[in-house]
Image (cartoon, rainbow over all chains, first blue to last red; front, side, top):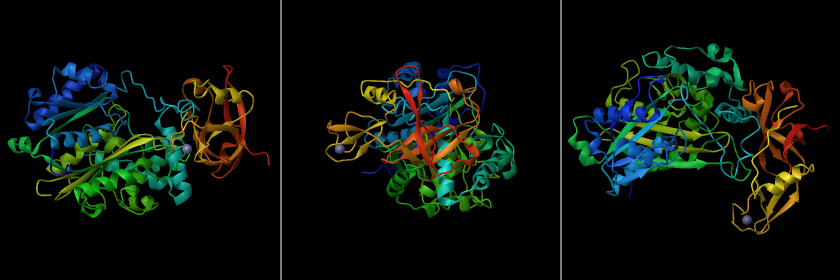
Length: 385
Length: 134
Ligand SMILES: [Zn+2]
């Protein structure tokens, strides 16, 4: 059994704000849930499955209580920013198994104006993979960037091209945190945060949230809204492997083939890709690992507008991505799915809408390239895909 | 000196951290499949036996990757630029650490390094590395 065609993304909502001092975390969850349900043409009372991450309370219980629901299915898979892509895959499997028919996936967070805690190492690695002055994602991602440069000759200017492409797209998004184009020089002249990553190699820090509604084919057919068919899902965790870490690749080398096999498509079929962009290096390694180019050739691939919509080799992150638009709660996964669905519906900004966007990909990387992370790949298609 | 905040110590890691206060860096080896373990565990992560032995590891290695953190936070707030790295130990494992007592502009991947211990004052010492003296 596969999940190909067994479920659809029928509703999406991205919180329009990037600073939300006047709402609680749970109020933001409600706001985005209602937004996505309205987009689908459904009501809260239709929801029979709830998916959330670890920051939403005591597993899924707090949020289910807050929503006032009595779901027949729930899941609080936590793999950082890729959690929500995993939730889509898990919701599709649950729907295929007949456990539920309307799944609600929400994300909310306030790293700008509210409490936010990050703990990369609370397991048996505590004191070994944590400590050392590591105080945020840039430090460990920088280790991956440095090693990639050493092995493959990747340059800071090539990494900067990824920010430039995202910023070209962000110009058309009035809600983007950084809604203007930047140049390679702007990136290289921004302060070094952790060599070789500059400030502009990093994603934005934003309050916000988003929600997705995943439904059965029967529910999708009953709605007036165009849904995106879920064609394939793959997930993987890459970790330090007992002191054997290799910083040159990501878990996408495993999640990607699983998703492509389930979808029955190849990289040549992908018209648009939402690629997790916590940092420029995250994008570079991921496009290599998903097979859009040979390992080590990502630097060349992204040059000359390779990622710029609508006519680059691989149009990516047309909302401006986490690099320029939004990285709510320090987690960019839900916005990756949201923009992919906009592309499938033909509802991206006209300047960056990919023509005939029949099949798209969304990929999440949660945790750290420099120690451990959860990789999740989703492939979405239009109805006839 | 770079701040040396004490790590969290539990029953599995107590022996490891005690050894650091004596200037020793101990590693485990699985008696069954002969692989070196990192970080300290009760069970081999390959065959899951509890039959693992410890040995005094070589205190040398090479830089696998590194980054210069331009401005630290928390205990490292006033440390100035400092280096986080993975060092590949002579005994095999690649371990997260700091490089200290170095010219940060001269660091490079593959550089030979040797271990130093920075006492935390709380029954442990952080294992760090400096460029090898020879
Ligand atoms: Zn063993």
